[in-house]
Amino acid sequence: MKDPILGHLSASAKLIYVFLLVIACFVILSMTGILLAIPLFHVNLLKDISVYMDYQNPDSVPVLKYLQILQSISLFILPALLAGFLFGGSTGNYLGLNKISTLRIFFATILIMFVSLPMISWATSLNEMIKLPDFMNGIEDWMKETEEQAAGLTEAFLNVSTTGGLLVNLLMIAVIPAIGEELFFRGLLQRLFSEWVRNVHIAILITAFLFAAIHLQFYGFLPRMLLGVLFGYLFYWTGSIWIPIFAHFLNNGSAVIISFLANRGTVSSGYEDFGSTEDLFLIAGSILFTAGLLYLVYRAAKQKESEQ
Image: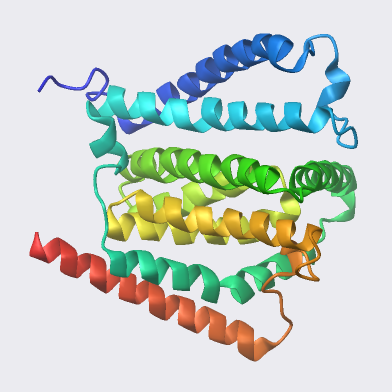
C-alpha cells in the first residue's frame, strides 16, 4: 500500500489543508447546485436572492431544503472523505468508518440519548440566562437576530404533516447532518487536534466548541457543546464513527418526528419542550444516569478492545 499523499504533514498543516478543502468543495458544489436549481426548480438563485429569506413562501421551502442538503455535503461530507484519503490513504480506516461496534454499545447509546434529555434541556435553560455586558449590546442584538432567522428556517423546514415530508426531513435534518458533521468534527478534526495538542481531552473540548460555534446559534451554544463532548467521548472510547453518528441521528431525528406528530395533532408539545423539566431531582438523576451509562460504554469498549 502506498503512503498517503499528505500523510507526512504536521497536524497544523493538515488543518490548513482541511480549511482549503472546505472552501474548494463549498464553492464548486454551491455553484453546481445553483446551476442545477434552474432546471430543477425553475429559479435563478443568482438573480432571485429573495428565495434565501422567503421562509413563508411554500415554493421557496423545497429550494431551501435542497440548498441545505448541498451545504451539508459540501462543508462536511466531501472535505472529510477527501481528507481521509489524502491524510490516511484509506478513508474508512482514517475516519473510523471501518470499525463497527457491538449491539450492546448501540443500545447503551439509545439509553444515553434518552436519559440525557433533562440534562441537555437544563443546559439550554442556563444558556438562555446568559447576558452580555452593556458595551456588547450590538453583538447581543446580532446574535438574537441570527437566532431568530435560524428558528424561522427550522420552523419552515419542520412544518410538514405528510409521510413524504417526514422522510425528506429525516434525510435532510437527521441522516445527512449526522453523517457529515460526525465525519468532519469527530472523525477528522478531533483526530487532528489530538495530534496537534497531544491531549485527546483538550481535542474533544476544542472540537465540541467549534461544533457548537459553527451553528451560529448563541442561545443553543451550551447544549450543542455538551452534545459535542458526549459524541467526542463516544468516538474516542469506541473508535467507531458509527456510534456518534447514531447518537447524532437520534438527537436530530427525534426532533423531526416529534414536530411531525405535533403538526398532525398526535402530540400536544413541540420538539423544543420535549424532555424539558425544572425538577432538580430529575436533572440530577439525568446527569448521574448519563455518566453511569457513559462509564458502561467505556468499559464495554475496553473489553472489546482487549478481546481483539
